[in-house]
Length: 329
Ligand code: 13P
Ligand code: SF4
Image 1 (tube, rainbow, N blue to C red):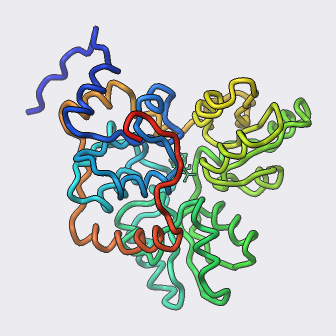
Image 2 (spheres, rainbow, N blue to C red; image 1 turned 60 degrees about the vertical axis):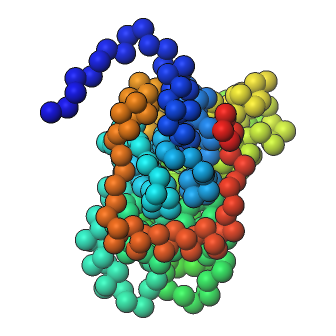
């Protein structure tokens, strides 16, 4: 029987998390889509590639992963001797859901002359059926190392795959998955916003459909979007990705105006990732206190999934990217 959850009333969550982080020799890794309180307490905030490299390199005994489940799985695949905890095990990803491993294995078997380049937003089981994993910040560099006549299956994000097809002139076979968050942006609403701020450049994540990317001045991973927003001489920037990333922008450039691109009715919350939102300070505290929920992956799947991840880290030349450092950075 589970122990009853004690009331957290009156607890100083920040102080408790800091105490437990020391006691457990834990590192807290956070994605840019987490809420500001979590980003601010994390030791390192980054994009998927930087977080993978950080998870592989850390000397902590425990990784508290504040992101979605596939990201925490990557940490466990790369650092099996460490305990990896995720504040809420239900923090999935619509891209992962769109690609069941058995169907992916069948699709691969039906195309034996293709290699599978798979976006990191998938389950460990799908990684185990893949040749090389990519993130949005590593895909172009990795594709450039493969012959142009190499036949490729790209899964699971059809928007990201189509973007790289256009960018590289390849004709990769695309798995029909999509991110519910990036598909929620509205071209009509974006153009209305652009009419209001004609000098504001648009920075977009490549998980957006082409009808959004066509209007973007910069297309890139969360880290690339953040760097663009800070480097740009523009005073106002329109950001077409999950809006919690704006927290880092505002911290680094408080004098600028960063506006999240709108969803269909102009001000819905549909561009907030409902999976990332499941992690809270309360659940982070409980996870560090109870050392669960823990990520566990069977050893056969882990070894098979590690191979394409190692290839990514090698081919991307990934040492730990800059990211945004906290206490242990
Ligand atoms: P990044 O690799 O750009 O951080 O993207 C992860 C993600 O899930 C975007 O929706
Ligand atoms: Fe998955 Fe989309 Fe959320 Fe990223 S924003 S974690 S791709 S559902």
